[in-house]
Image (cartoon, rainbow, N blue to C red):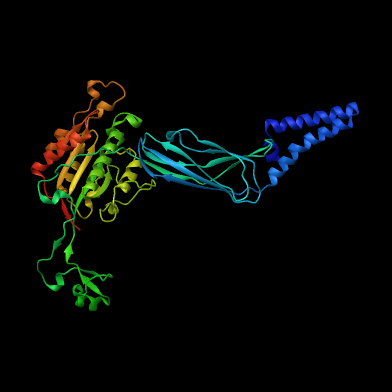
Length: 433
C-alpha cells in the first residue's frame, strides 16, 4: 500500500488534496454536499491505489535479436513480444528498455488497452561502432491506471546478450606458400597399398557399402567396422594477435590495438573461407571465448568441417582485451599438429621478443606478419627518443615474411604484398588430421 501511495501521479495527488480541502471547507461551512464531493475526490485515488497494489499483473516478455552476431557499424533489430498472462486488465503500459549507451538511446513505448490474453509485438534498432559483448535489458515497465492517478514501476529481470564483432576487410586471393598444399582444400588421399593392419577403420554407418566392411576389425571390436578408403588432409593456420598493452599506442577505438583486431579478424575470415582450419592465439596465452571465459588452446581449432563460417573466431575477437604482460606467452607452440601457416599481427617489437619470434618461425611452415607502425596511432606528439623503430627488419632477420602497416594503409594491399613475398620461399602448410 505504501508503494501504491508513493506511486500517485500529479493528477492523483491533486485529486487527494482537492478532496481533503473540500471536506474541510464543507465542515467549516456546514455544507454536507461539498463534504460528500470531497470524500468522492479522496476515495477515487485511494481506491485506485488499493486496486493497483493488490492487483496481480502477470506480464511476459520475449526478446529476439536478428542477427545476434553483427559487425561493428552494422544495424541489428530487437523484436519484443509482450503478453498479459493475468486475468486482470491493466491500463497503460510505459516501457523503457535498458540499452548500453554504445548501442544508442533507450527506446520507450506506450501501450494502451491491455486486456486478458493481450499480446503485442514491438521492435527497435540498435547499432554499435565499437566491438564488444553487450547485455540488452532489463526492461522497466510503468503500469498506469485508466484514470492516470497511479503509476507503479516494475522491471523484467531477463537480459539477452548481443555481440558486436570487429569490422572485416575483404582480402584478395593470394598464394601463401609455394606448393599445392597451401590451397586450403581438404585433399583426400587414397590408400595405395599396405597390409590390412594399415587400413584405418571407423564404425559402420547407415548407407555404407557392405564391401567396405573390415571383418577382422569387426570381429575384434565386437561391432561392425568399415574401411576408411580416404584419408582427409586439412590445411591449418594460426592467427596470432599481439595484445600486450605496452606495445600499442592510442586509446579506445582509435588505438593501434583496435586496428590490429580488425586485421586479425580479416585474416581469420579470409583463411576460413579459403578452407583452412584456423585457430586464434594471443600473446597473453589462452584466447577468450564469446562468453568472456578463458578457453582452452588445445581445442582452439575451428575446423571447416565442423563450422561453416568464422563466427566463433569473430566472437572471440569481439571480447579480446589487452593484457599487462611484457613478454609473449608462446605455450601454444607446444601443441601437437605444428606447422601450417602462422599469420601474426604485431605491435612494436624489440630484441627481447627475438627469441620467441625465432621459435615461432621454427615451429611453423610459413610465417607471415603484419608489423604495425604504432607511433602513427599516438594521440600526442612523440619526441624522437619515444618513437619505436619498425619491427620488419627484426622479423625478416628471423625468417618471417613481414610488411609494415601504418594508419591509412590498405590492409588488402599489404596482404597481397605479404602473400607475394610468402610465395617465393614458403614451406608446406598441409597438416595431416
